[in-house]
Length: 470
Image (cartoon, rainbow, N blue to C red; front, side):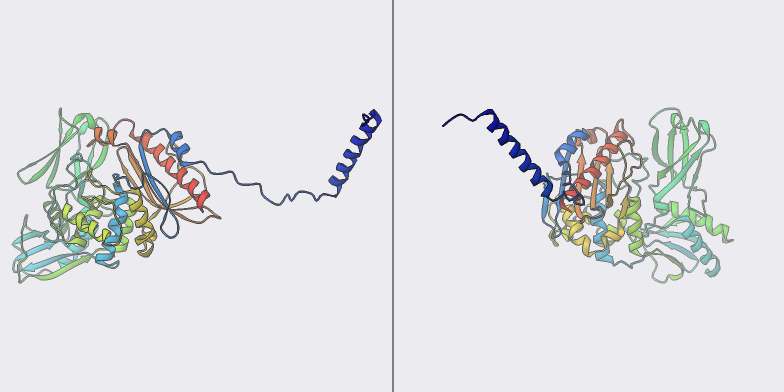
C-alpha cells in the first residue's frame, strides 16, 4: 500500500473537524435547569477527628422503622447525664398520667395546724403565700401548734453524694419541697450584708432555719448543722465582690415550715415554731390546699431547665419505691418490658456517676416509646452554636434533650432540614478519665471550651446524617 500523501492527510483531518463541528451544531444544548450533583456530606470519622476532643464518642442513627442506620459504639455503656430525663418523662407520664397534679394541704386537728406536703416539686414561696392566705381565712380557734409533715416521699439528704455539697442542682428530696429545695444567698463586697432568702417572683421571705457565715479559711463552701439550723460557712475568698448564688437545702421540712410561718404572720396569723411529725392524725380536717400544674407542664419544665429534683421526684412518685436506687431499678424494668435493653440505672436525673445507657437504647426510646408518648412536645429546640458557644446560623432543627456533666456532653432526639426527612439519633461524647479527675468540682479547667466543641460536633454530625439519609 502506498504511503498517504501530505495532501491526503490534511484532507482527512479537515473532514473530521468539519464533521465534528456539524455534530456540535446539531447536538442539544445542556440542561442548565438541572442542579449539579450534591456534594456528599462529610463522614462522621472526619468530623470527629476535626473536633479533636480526645473523647470516646458513641452514637446511633435510626431509620423510620427504628432500625439502626449507622452506629459507632452503639451498644457501649455510657453515662447518660440529663438525657436520662427522656426515659423519666415517659415513665412518669405512663404511671401517673399526663394530667396528674400534686397537692399541698393544710390540715387542722384541734389546736394544731399541719402543713402537709404532697411531693410537689414545683412548690415555691408564691404558692405557699397563697396557701397562707387561705389558712388565715379558714382556721378556727386558737392555734397552739404548727406541724410539718413530709411523708408523701422518702427523705433523702442529697441526690448524689458524689457531687459537691454546695451545688444547688444536688439538693435534698422530701415529701415537702420549696423553691426546688434551694435558698438564695446574697452578699456585699467583702462578705458583709449576707442574706438568705426563700426567693420567688413575688415573695422572698428570709430563711431563718438556714444561716451563712464568712470564714477565713477552708473550702469555698462548707455545710454543717447546729442547734436546728443549717449553716453554710463561706470562705471570704469567694466574697471579694458583691454577688449571689443558690445553695441547696438539706433540711427541707424545717425550711418550708419556717417560711410558711413567716408568710402566715404577714397575713395576720401568728403561729408557733414549726415542729416535724411522722404521722398525720386521723381526725385532721383539710382547711386549705394548692395544686401543682398538670404533670405534662411539669415535665416540660424539667426537660427545658433540666431540673434534677423534678426528675427524681416524679420518678419516686411513679415507682412508689423507698429510695432512689430501688426507684431507678423499677424504671429500668419498665423500659426493659417495652423492649429497651442496655440500661443500668441508679437514679432518674442522670446525675449519678454510676448510671449507664447505650446510644442504641436511647435512640430506640426516642423513636419508639417517644413517638407514641408525646415526647416531642416535651422537648425543646436546641439552638445551633459555634466552637466558642456563640449562636450560629443554619437551617438544622434539633428537637432534643441535652445532657451535660464535666467532660460529658450528650444529645438525643430528632433532627431535620428543609427538604429532607427527619432522623432520630443519640450522641454521647464522654471523656471519663477527665470526668473522674474533676468529680465534685463545679467548673474544672478546660471544661467550658471542651463542652462548646462537643456541642458543635454533635450538630455537625446530625446535619451530615440528615443530608445523607433524609
